[in-house]
Image (cartoon, rainbow, N blue to C red):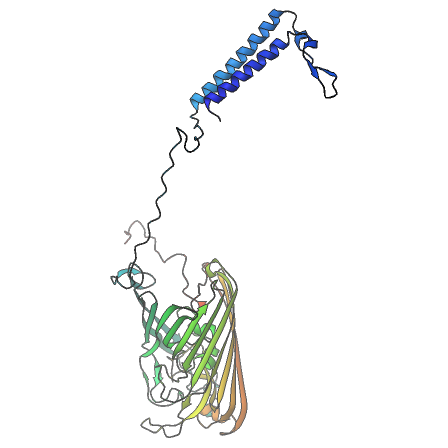
Length: 499
C-alpha cells in the first residue's frame, strides 16, 4: 500500500471525476462529442436524459458524495486498525531507515592441540570405556566367555580304532570353556588404534600343533588380536601391523562374539585358520571409496602353524587380498547385499615331521600343507582333544593358491550368509607323516599326486524372533554386534520394591 498522502490524492481525483460525470448528465447529448479517426463526428451518449430537472441531478451528486465519504471513512478506519509499515525511503533521502547492523560471524572453534588433554571420563558403552573430551584418547575393556557342552550318540563305526577308519580321538561327552578371552583396545592421539586380546583356554600340543595325537598337550594362554593401526593415511587409508586376521573369508573375519553359532563352518578348519586360530603376524591395508560401497583389503603375512604368532623358519610368506562390493546398502545396513572375492597365494610353511621323546625334531623340515576338519560341536578346546572328521595328513608341495567367494544379504530380521572356497596345491606329494587313520587311505608315502584341488561351501539363514537385525561394520565389511530392541527387565509386584 502507498502513503496516506498519495491515497487521499487518489480519492480527491475520483470525487472530481464523479462530479464531472454527474454534471455531464445535465448537458445535451450533442455537446459531448469528438472526432473519430476518419474525421467524422463521434457522439458520446449522455446520461442527462435520465434526469428531468436539476433537482434530480443535485440528489444524484449528493448520493455519490455520501458514498465516497463512506469509502474514505472505511479506508481511514482500516489504516487505524492495521499498522501499515511505510515503504522505506531511497538511500540518501531524509527519513530513510537505517541499515540493520550486520549479523556477527559465527564464532570459530577454539584451536585444540591433539593429545594435550589426557583426562579420561568413564562410561558404559557395551563394556567399560573411558575417553577424553575431544575423543582423541579412548580405552575400552571387554572380553568373552563361552562354555560348550557336548553329548554324542554314535554307532560302532566312529568308535572303531583309527587303523580301522574310526575317529581319532574318539567321540567323548565333555563340558569345557570354549573361549575365555580378555580384550583391551583403544585410541591414541586421534589417529592411532590398538587392540590386545588374550585367550586363556587354548589347549595345544606343546611339541607340534600339526598332529593332535602327539604328546604333551596343555592349556596355554595365546594371543589373538595384538596390533596397532594408523588411520586416514592418504591413498592407503588404514595400515594395521601386528597379529591379526588376514582378509580371507566372511565368517573368518566375523568375531566369534557375533557368529550365528558357537563354531564356524567346516571350511574354517580346512582352509581359513586350521592351526593358528585364524590369526597371523603381518601388515594389512584397509580402504574404501568415499561412498563406502566398494572396499578393498591387502596384506602380507607370515604363514604360521601355532596360535602364538611365532615362526622360526625361512620362507612361508602369504599375500592376501579381498575386494568387496555393496550393490545396495540401506537403513545403516539393516537392508544390504554384500558380494566379495578374496584370495591367497603362499609358500607352504616349513615344518618338522617327527620328534624324539624330549620333543626335539628328528627329521628335516619340509614344506607341506595339511587339510583337516574337526566337528562343528567341539568336544574340547582348540587343539589335540578334538575329534577329526576328515584328514589328509601332510602333503608336501611347492606352492598354494586359494580363492573365496562371499554372498551375504540382510533384510530386517532375516539374514543370509554363504561362501565358497577353493584351494590349489601344486606339485604335491604324499608323506608318511600324519594321523594313523590317513595312512591306509591315501596313496603310498612319497607318491607324486600333481595339483591337488579341494573345495568347500556353506550357507546359513538366520531370523530374529524378536525383530532385531544384524548390524554391519564398514571398517572390515562383515557382521558386527547385534543390538536388542529392549534390555532385559523385570516387573516387580506390589509386595517387592523395585531395586
